[in-house]
Image (tube, rainbow, N blue to C red; front, side, top):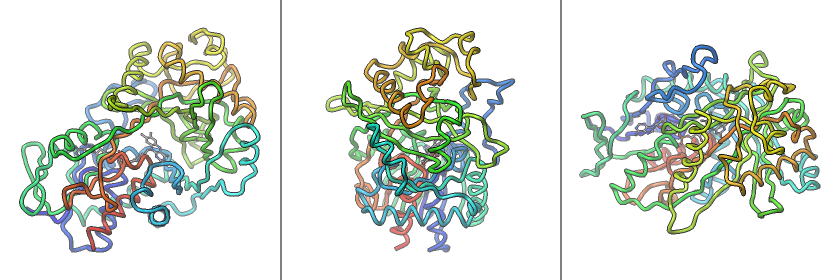
Length: 454
Ligand SMILES: Cc1cc2nc3c(=O)[nH]c(=O)nc-3n(C[C@H](O)[C@H](O)[C@H](O)COP(=O)(O)OP(=O)(O)OC[C@H]3O[C@@H](n4cnc5c(N)ncnc54)[C@H](O)[C@@H]3O)c2cc1C
């Protein structure tokens, strides 16, 4: 059996590539390989009662399966070139924004209608931030919410299931260059295709590296973002989140000149574990449905680390720090801001004194044993800066979960078509190291689908 196109990975990049191919060229034979489960079978066993922490499932339902890492995410589609990836460097700023708007239209048509599009443009908070040494980035954000995001995925699957061949629970082992295309090898079998779209996301980062090594596709080291997830009573950030939903704020530290930024803000949301290749880190999400919301808001505070030659393994550096927290805490560590400032670890007793309850059960401990001093100093400085625009951020009870790591794949060398040095072999989404978000990954899928359909 020879396919016109084989897509590897059914995250947003792969799904939107399949969607656009079927819309423009429904006669094409397309197959999608996905290491994880079909959407209906994705289920994280952590229920807070019998299973309280990550048990390291073979295929992590949070990261893998139809919908990719985005399936149980907050569904925040940021329409901007300011963050979420550098797709615009390849395809141009206007084209990147147009594609992100187009993705938004598809989401609205498939169950996202009625959700709110927030915007930072012209907001009074920009001034307030500047007056306090903070910089609020420009963006429009469509917040689908974890619940509606899931409905959109169900509808996209319903649209695609009879048009393309899905192979779930089928990780691809390797890609071989053959005459007139590629052989995609899996679990003892192989299928051939003329063109291949690789969209394996962050969970496929190690595999992507191997493919690039095997096929001698040039790559370069990317950054790693390391920090903590902050959780506090929703009231502290309500004036910002009610108007903007998500505010991406950047702060340059006085001590080192490092940039610390807020990331993935989840008003009235929950903090969750994330398992990347067996390493437990922390993340967050929130629901659109008020009945499922909590009394807390969470967001990440991250510092980007870039390394120069000869060190290439920025992800390895992030992993080592995350491993340290896993070693000391058996998973994620949580510390009250007041304890951190006083140089003492948090204990179950001290946690019990707090005026609000955490949404994730993590091990009380000390983050200074895990995070390098420079990173921790920057995070503390930013918490005090945020306290000026959102008083209460620097309260003793504010919770810091560690560590949050944003791993970026090595950046793969591709053309403006997102095509590798092999004609017809496209590398897109977070797996390419070029995108780091739902909207950019989805837009990259549409971009290559249109190129192939041409
Ligand atoms: C909890 C959480 C919350 C998030 N919230 C947001 C948010 O609100 N907004 C935002 O913009 N971003 C968010 N993100 C990030 C966002 O989900 C990703 O940027 C996005 O999913 C990337 O899409 P992708 O298609 O490139 O990769 P992925 O979504 O990672 O999909 C890749 C797929 O490829 C599969 N795969 C990997 N290797 C193989 C292989 N060898 N063979 C076959 N299949 C393979 C994986 O199983 C996976 O399903 C969140 C992430 C997490 C984990």
